[in-house]
Amino acid sequence: MSNPTKEIRVQPIENGTVIDHIKAGQALNVLKILGISGISNGVVSVLINAPGEFGNKDVVKIEGRELRIDEADRISLIAPSATINIIRDFDVLEKKKVEIPAHVAGVVKCINSNCISNSNEPVTSKFEVMNLESGIELRCDYCERVISENIAEHLL
Image (cartoon, rainbow, N blue to C red):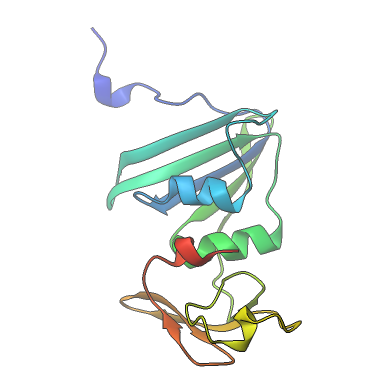
């Protein structure tokens, strides 16, 4: 009889990216950031609420794809503790924590409908990123409104 805690829940990938330590409940938002929908050519595995050392977490495995820096920056806004593992020939070639950028541009829509970044003017949204103990906060460079909750809902 097998021990259920020792079973492999998701098969290893040969080449690609594993995004681990995603805050529980954010895996689908990570897929949204990466533009992965139900129609995809590659294999994508998603674990939601998987038990981890520090509580439940989500994990996303993407076969045959490595992330760009701008994609990792976006993921850091909703999963600041995430790690990105580059896999080649079933081995971890590189493992690093996401880095939270000091500023982001063209990534998030301001919550202030009167903000110039939401007008018809050719203005790109820009935010200062604050990494606080309570979580990530984004302050609009134009109107100074702060987004501190549900950041994934405001991603462009």
